[in-house]
Image (cartoon, rainbow, N blue to C red):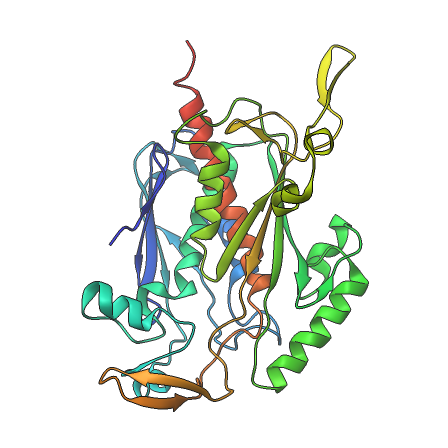
Length: 352
């Protein structure tokens, strides 16, 4: 089982959704980076369950404790170990369906892969693990100091934003940069929750002030690593960078980002490339969108099969998000930070 992400900056996560705790080890972080539990907690509070009436009612404080690698408020260069205890787990609702393969979950594939699985809340396949990524991402953001990463919800169901106002993102429950769209999104989520259903959406992550030169032209392309990081987030089914799938219907004369020199500085007139050319950042904004599937745990009864390959039906009880997008936003920001920090450290080996 692979539990490590990154090359020079390496995050190894551990723990299960309903185990005593989850945690991680972030290795390869340079010494002298100022970091605190409070800074990590700030991002964790944006991801944690139970933060509003449109998320899961599992009420986890997600309080992080740094165990190693930080002394007197600075990283020492040693592995940064940290732990987040699971305080509000309830495995009872899973016990009665532990032998049924739930639609949309990894129950069947985990059994096929390992011949055994932790059925309590999905074990390692649970989105609970993403709290570890958010905590590590807070450290990565300090490594890439000066680079701004902003994530937000751009679509839930058929409802899309019509503009981007960064001041609105943290003012509403869905983290949308459009107040009117956010209101409609919340109404939709409340409706699907009452119906015992769920709904998907789309999250966008924008990076400003990233230096040109990050990434590699063959293997280790920056866009490939970003796509891998985003696809590694639970429930993500698609990734677009720049113009994304829209480029399939464009001509070269439309898609090429023409260049100009302004006051001795190179500038791109458009940004269809999404800030990356030939696998290497070009200094423009990096723009990434991810498609998030509807939460598969729903109350509506569905057809299923048990471990004896007998047909059955299932209604998944418990505490689940009717839409995962608002909590995906800080996870996507964290994964972007981890990729950029890793590539920034790698870039230091590219030139003398």
